[in-house]
Length: 226
Image (cartoon, rainbow, N blue to C red; front, top):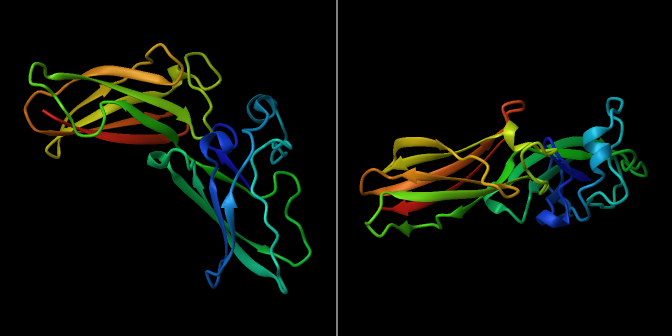
């Protein structure tokens, strides 16, 4: 069982892996559970080489979860993946069902692979419930943004910061205030800008990363009191 990040590589140990559950699709009986472990896979094979449709891209070092089921008859099973486990604010879920037959392995090629959409967005500043000291109406918003596999984002890189939109949505007492683009901040995965909080109140700041070419999206949020 592999779990791959949409538009990127396999979700493995470096991001806490992806949690995997295997259930009987009809009864809900839990048959196995665990998490993917291993590396993110071969960058060239996954991202650069032109391969035939459905050609395997996993390698022996790619993160995987393996289980052996004790079956006495064919069963339709449901596999659910949740991850990345090391970034719970960005965690997404994917699942699918398939028939399995006793004695028939499904480990060939890429085996059973689920794709997890999103970006892992982590607001570094401000911390939750930050209170301004009253001398300013501005605050720096800074976020770390990576692919769900942990793959790096930088200008002109394989995951190109110029291609993605990163911005902060600001709301005060539940009402919209502004949306402020967060440009690349000079260090890999880092995006930042100063945001104005025009009036006293409780503010929610939501930072999103968005890929307009695929719709891939990730979000994190924090709060500020002015």
